[in-house]
Image (cartoon, rainbow, N blue to C red; front, side, top):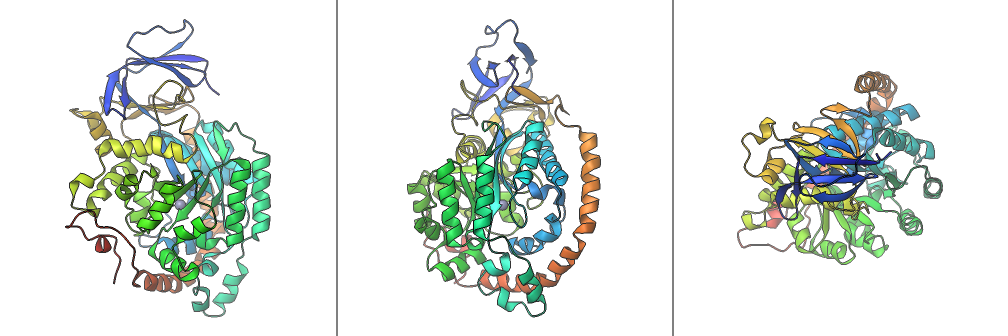
Length: 512
Ligand SMILES: [Zn+2]
């Protein structure tokens, strides 16, 4: 619920586009920034005063890709799993969630995001074997109660990993294969119908929590399903997000299965457009990038997860050169081990340095912060509402304590936010004009109760999921061997070198 009016006085307001900060007051009316003006500017008499002295005010960070269902499975992802072994283990670590668990997942997400300076997220939420209105409503209610903004996209697939990756199922010996065959996702028509029902009866205020659709990974969806998702997104005017070319195994199999790249395949089915955001987008060649650029699609860069799974390094500068909108994300709290957007922002900048010795191509501090605010907001379809501190934008703000050691001494605020900040200086956070974090205290979440409930749920789920965990462990070496072989296969991508010293083929770990 938006507060009627408040005036935030005494802070330094960050302007990322100009890479500057100015002493300014902010008048907020009905959750919207009504004015950003000089210190001491006039305000309505009844406006509540919010003291921002010794605080930097930055736009709330926007997390372009998370998985709410993964939150109660923090710490369960093996040290050395690549993405495919994570997917193999998923039923054993994220299964058996009750509606209360789903709500709890959302609340734990919200608490961490708020504490670490993030005010909005794009959540690809999975339910097995089919998305449910009740499940989506449970996680949506958690975000609503916590006060964070969210896009919630039921994550969809009509093939399990073992059928999605051509040839994988055949390498599984009996009787394991028989057991694998018993795990089935719903036929796509049923899932599409369920999503349509969710879209038709959306219970939340769409300016705070809105729906989207997430055909999870192209290989995991039949073409019919992908096209149905495309049509639903158009019909209901909602965003689409998918994991695009995240691993080399996916890229190799995509080429083998479709005869062209995964991006070209999505293009041929008409999925690429301004409403689409492609998460990870690592194994893209120049033509793939042109496809995304020409149709106005966004990319969501998740550097922590990309490195955690060893998936590869996304060529973000090449995307920016083509005017592709890029947002930033953490990925799930279990696959990148936290929802810390400050960490993602810093790594996004640092990775660009590994990709080329040409330092002119490296991503600057202001560039990555813009991606983590305006870029992610645009990918969510909220470009005119989130990501900036300016008149007409939502009052989603984070107050950084300038007395924190991260800013002692202080020279360049943007640089120190990007390269130094770890969430430790987040003192307060406002969403929709309401302080959801007030001088270190969460105002919408009872953290003691949350801790108690989350521990109890995790303990119960660990017991219930044990049989599935043991089962997926039996498959681990089979899946691992299959995918490791694919990752070592020759694979040529048409990638233009950006200076004579760089060797992109080796940099993106493509073997000959
Ligand atoms: Zn993901």
